[in-house]
Structures are given as structure tokens and as C-alpha cells.
Image (tube, rainbow, N blue to C red; front, side):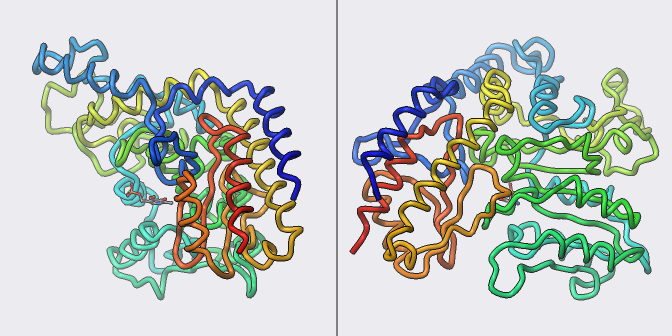
Length: 422
Ligand SMILES: Cc1ncc(COP(=O)(O)O)c(C=O)c1O
């Protein structure tokens, strides 16, 4: 492999990168006193520089105002979530009335299934993907039991074909049409956490609707990573976490999308709590639940402002950088990584060492399946200042994140893998 040429190209691409300044908006961990090459944003995104100030603002307002902060804080806590609607709508391709930041991801999946999974004796089947994140599988399994069925009876898991690591989308579509009137729900990760495969959410939604089923997506690995057009694709619901590409901190506040055809319908069932009640009468403390006619009515509890303050600092960066620019850089950055790995694999040693299992339908993550020495390569990366992500049994996930990774980071990563050769 011609490392000099790769280095030269990386410098050229960095000089043309319109988002290059954004890396200054983030704090980088150090390894041996040197700024780490952080390629792990698919697991936990980096802390924005502004986060501390944003959280401190709420701590200060709390100490200065006490309960009055609900109304008189610089960002009043009563309506704190409202400041995210526009940016979340931009990131997800939604209307502002269709999104809200609340709770945590798995909790939200259950809350959404309370609305959207209404099995009957004849229509109770759920389709999901094999190697979905375990929490999603557990959630779906428990939903079947909650509705007096079993995972064996109600859950259909679409696996990759023999010898493949990724799911053939045709198999998902075929399963949907085979299930037909028995199908209640399709619930799939928009981007699979393990392989990095992106699913065609529009096609899957259309197929689900054609048989009268609901289509929902877990966007943990999609939000802030790929272009989303949830409203236009007519997705029924989606949920995400904010600690990966949204950089809002460990366990940060999650979010949901509910298509306006459901969110504006007062007859759509939801588990209710006071924060979903219309604001103008919420504090009359009446016994009758009057829902806000938007996704906000799925909120049950008052907002976790300290965690939302971190969310605010991060979403400001997205509002400024914008998704089209992020996605455009992402394609170049991950394309560069892919091409360097391809070049590396022209050497038989590396061809035998690993395979990139992520298909062309991808976001920024590439998953490298190791045929041998995977753990040693991972340790070699760590020793050389790279923070990556190991997934059992033998996958290293690499996510060059457009907001804070450079083409030089990608070059350095590949040169370190190159230096592993025994
Ligand atoms: C795809 C996916 N679903 C669900 C979860 C679980 O998220 P939480 O612990 O926030 O509920 C994760 C966590 O990484 C995930 O990646």
C-alpha cells in the first residue's frame, strides 16, 4: 500500500473540508497525553465544548431561582423541550409537531408500542431483523408476552442468508407480504448497530402499509448519521438515543417521532401523563387528560433539564453545520476509509485478516469482521492512540464522524492497521 500517497490525499481532502473547523467544538480524550483518534462516535459521541456551560447555566438558574426557574430560567424549564423541535425536525426530516425529546430509548420503544402494537388474535406478528440490538429484541419479546402471546408465536426474525453478514432487503419485503394480514408491526433498526447496514425505510414502510401493518424504526445509529425523511417516507413512528451521533452525553435524553397522521389524531391511544396534557390547562390539575395535539402529548413526565442542557449544546452544532453538509462530508470520509482499506487488502495478508461487512448502503460506520487476531489488532489500535469499538465475537466498528473526524484520522487509522502486519 502506498502510505505516502494516502497521506497526501488525506491532506488534500482536509484542506477542502468545509466542516473542518467543527472539530474545535468538541473535547477529545487523551491517550498517553496525546489527543486520541476517536472513531467511536457510533457508541458514545464526544462532549461538545459548550456542554459544560450549558449545564452550568441550568445549575446556576436552579440555585438562583429555585422553583421559579420553571418560568424565569433563561431557558424556562416548563417549555424546555420546545427549543429542540426545530433542530430535531431538521435532523429527522419531520415536522416540528412530530418530534419530541424525552426519556430513554428502550423506554420510548415500549411507550410507542403501547400506541402502535395492538395485536389481535389474527394480526399479532412482528417482523424485526436478526442481530438487532439486544435491548430491542428483549423489548419485542416482552411485548409479545405482555399481550398474552410468545416470541415463538408472534416474532419473525429476518436473518442474513447463509454465508452473508447482512440482510437482503428483499427478504424483509418478502416476509412482510407473506405475513400479510397477520402482520401487526415491522420494527427494524434504520441502521443496524453491528453491520452498519442502512435499511430502505421508505420501501419497508410502504410494504408494511400495503398489508395494513405499522412501520417503526429504531434510529439509534441513524440519527445525526444519515439523511432521514421520516415524514415523507410516511414512517409511523421512530425512536432514538442522543448519546451516539447526537453527542448529548451518556444516557442523554432520547427522542421520538410520530407521524402527524397519528400525532394530530385525538383518538390515537397513548399512555398518558401530565406533561402530555395541553400546557394552557395543565396546572388547573383537572382529572381529564387533554392531550397536546402533537408528539409532545406522548411525554409523561416533566423534562430532565440537566440532561437536556447537554442536548441543547449538541443540537446547536447540528443546527449550525446542517445535515446536508454532515451527510456530504460523511460520504467522502467513509468513502476514503473504504478505499484505503480496499487498497490495504490488495496485500494477501490483510485480505486474510479481515473483511469489511458493511454494505454500500451505509452511514459513516464500517464494521470489520476479523478472521484471526481481531483482539490483537484492537489492542494494537489502542496502544497507538485510536479509540475504536470492539463487538463480540470478532468485529471492530469504526465510525469516522464528520463533525469531529478528519481525513487524516482515517489515514492514521489505516496506517496503524498496516503496521500490525506480523
Ligand atoms: C440500536 C439500539 N437500540 C437500543 C439501545 C439501548 O438504548 P438505551 O439503553 O438508551 O435504552 C441501543 C444502545 O446502544 C442501541 O444501539
